[in-house]
Image (cartoon, rainbow, N blue to C red):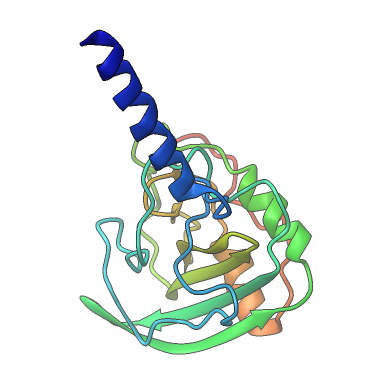
Length: 189
């Protein structure tokens, strides 16, 4: 009986491993659109718990924000609204893909503490960023905020790294530049 059980376990394991051969999916880059299609922004997005657009097909247990490689396509989607967000525009980023990949991949995981911000008000623009990799498309959510107090997330990995200025600049120009991070001011920005 133990020999049959061991044989059955090996057969099941072999069958399950055959299901993933050729797909090369990693937890941080699951396919959300077929490889032949371009990244297209969703027309509407619901508001996530973090106050930003909810990430399409949120990931499970991603080890980092994005894979440690250069995306082959990057699209920035801007939204407006309160509960249901409506797409106001999109821009394909053609310059700075390696910079975006490096910046997002090296974003540290949030330690869970709240980010304290000043109470100054100003422009707020929610963004979804669609990044295409050889294995598929990964969505990252962030927002431009006058205080620089927005987090960045892929649905399961959240970083306190502020990339709202970078997303805002990329939306306006089609160029991703790194370096407009949150001020290093302790727990209050």
